[in-house]
Image (cartoon, rainbow, N blue to C red; front, side, top):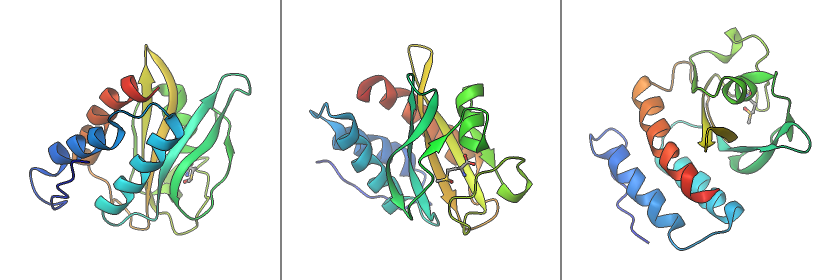
Length: 161
Ligand code: SME
């Protein structure tokens, strides 16, 4: 395993994070094992989060269903028209929400969450799930986080699914 754990505030952070995540999934094909390690590493390297994990699209049930995560227990099923995760899924775009209290339809799994970043996981032009990051601080996530994670997960999604 190739781990650097550079400081979050350093310029190198997201470059190194990408290498670390690729190292974590290298040689492993099991989706749930890979998502579990990815959520763990994100949770332990990106500061000021209270929840971090995945919802995967179920084509048979037409819902997002809770996958591997770090944090308190969360709601299991999210309909595509609901919440920040549903918006990321249906619009196939990253949702950067400075204050979840101002987002109509936000689903409050952990009442501590105040800001949220949700990245759609896309392969072959299909959204197969979302990565959801929650913070207890308003405006915790910046466009730097959104752009870098979007880039990293556009590559990772092509490999893990
Ligand atoms: N807040 C999300 C639901 C998932 S939890 O935050 C873990 C939403 O509005 O979609």
